[in-house]
Amino acid sequence: MAELSTTVTRPEPFDSTLALLTVEETARRLQIGRTTCFRLVLAGEIESVTLGRLRRVPADAVPAYVAKLRHRPAQAA
Image 1 (tube, rainbow, N blue to C red):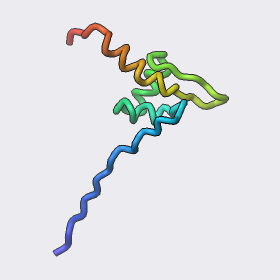
Image 2 (cartoon, rainbow, N blue to C red):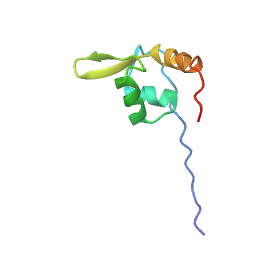
Image 3 (cartoon, rainbow, N blue to C red):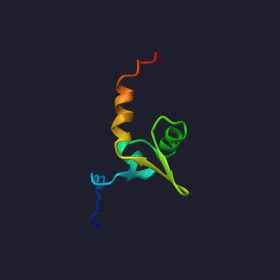
């Protein structure tokens, strides 16, 4: 009988030395989708900078965004 193998994928550890993150890295840190993260960046909800044609998110913008969410009044469903 053949054995089934299972693979457990673990999130990559954060490199705390990075000053600027890609939008994908930011999405992973926030545990949201890439497209959602791009929308938040383009809407100005998450601070970002451009370097030539690249868009990067300052590492300290992630906790700032979370803090902003924590102080936002709850919305009724």
